[in-house]
Length: 340
Image (cartoon, rainbow, N blue to C red; front, top):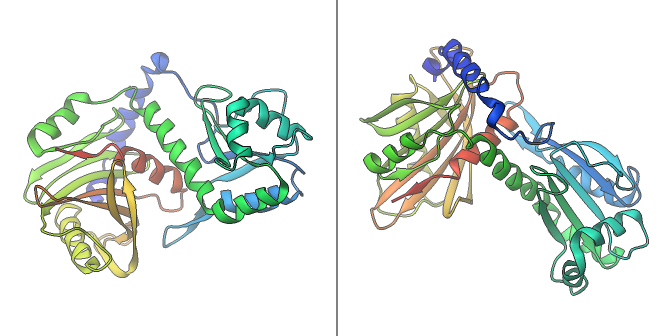
């Protein structure tokens, strides 16, 4: 990892080069993917806003610090007549037409969508590129107040991830307007996997000893890596020691002696693109460089036919800086991973 940090000047030149050609790129709406406007019946002090804000701003633990997944930057009791300027909007209200929020939800859903809600077939609905390209409007609704309370109780923990998945999709779409298609094809041809590479990332290393590749972006440093080894069983919560040793050996050899601690990692079943995966997230450090340390998450995917275990690695070095946007960007690119 320390070699990556040392290349800041080169990374800045790459960034300037990328920005010089941005006139052809369609920019998304202003603001951060981490910002959310909340429009709910009752406004800031109402029941729905009081319930939703902590569900949207759920804390993420990066071992040395925590950050909210999103920041609710505005809470209103009725929709604005002007299009919102943020990338994420959440609308919450009862679908009875008696309030401005309910009326806006009805308009957005249309007759078929309203029928689905009234039939109990839908309660959380995404409207991508609404009201403007690059924006998300997330609708949370039900036929009655009691039904809406049940929705928030039963599905409230999904809300932050629904917004996050949409942010990753929109961010990925934007970043990949400029991509290194030849590099991705070379990975597929030579190593047997595919991953999208935006022009803001450069190849730092690829090799057979140990087998793997690392892509790098500066300012602050972040790394997207793929490495693999022969493996005869699916990754599970019952063999986490093996997974820990696999990654620990790889990063020690490739990342200038980086280390991990067994008591500072977590494991969870998840998805990575089209694959079932086991995610390990934790904290890396390097004793040779006292200030070097940061957050990582690794997605383990097993290719049953080839008997290969793939590790898609996302690593950041951002001391004292916000990490959620960096991790979201890496995760968005990691989701493009495919093996042959």
